[in-house]
Image (cartoon, rainbow, N blue to C red; front, side, top):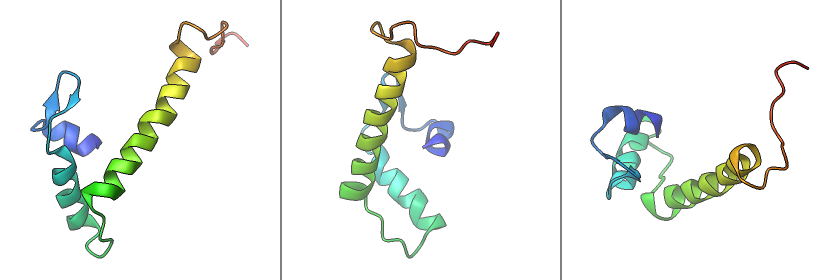
Length: 75
């Protein structure tokens, strides 16, 4: 995903443009030719999981209901 973002073709203000999963599928096919990963359901499911997991972490650190949870650099 980082490589896809760095290319810049599929970047949008709120994430990626339509068709980015197909491009990611092509990029993975070059690196892992026998993996047989498809944009739907494999990549789409994995990205949904990553979004859910990172949203939980983001809310713990930056959310409004974090109960002052955070990193203390002085301890």
